[in-house]
Image 1 (cartoon, helix red, strand yellow):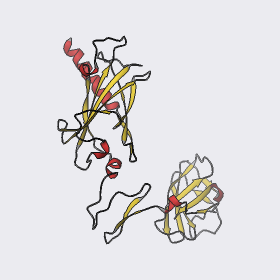
Image 2 (spheres, one colour):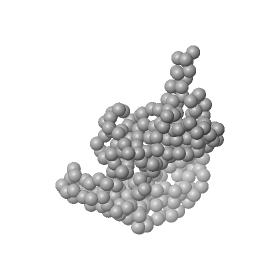
Image 3 (cartoon, one colour):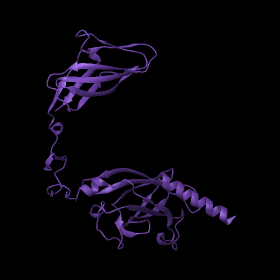
Image 4 (cartoon, helix red, strand yellow):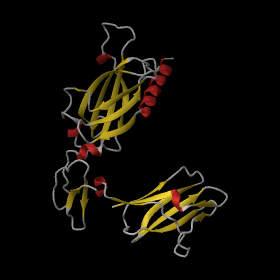
Length: 284
């Protein structure tokens, strides 16, 4: 009987572990990682609307390797027993070797994440303390490292020059000679060219100004003359309504001044597409 109870508890812990999700990484201060999980009491029941204490840790090398960062939280679960924390925004413990997770050298992995949960009794008990009642919910490897946090304090050294972190909303660009620099994309400066209400032509063999007929259950390639479009320019094909019978499968600048749009028809019969159903946006 005791073995059965132990097995059920272990299964519950692994069940909770798999419910945990890494939701979002913030590259701007304060650094943190959203984390959500289901808390269970010692009997394996969801700890609904309960006070819980969390202790989590980032571990380097192996699951039992070097503890890099450790913190604690005290919070309330919701009506389903779910709790949310931001890893990196708890109360740091003395066991931590860094003062912030932004200082973690994510490039020197692998890293593992461990979480322990203590569920407070529903009736206050002076003898109860979280430190003696933590349940270990397991340790799992972080296969996708929080690179946005690492990029916030990293330098680039595998090119011809070392550079420091760039300003917000910039991208690191390089050329064939190895020169690198932080650049603001032109799209961020709202420097776009919009071509509206284009009349579609099925191909260069079609008469200019004709609309497109999409064959049943297949894709159809359409070419458009868009002056100023250059190969590599990002293309957005914006629908002016909800077209349930067909969709844009892909779009790109196929040649100078020419945009290709591939439509997909989901019906067993032909579908007509008129030129004023879409707007074409070229980002410069």
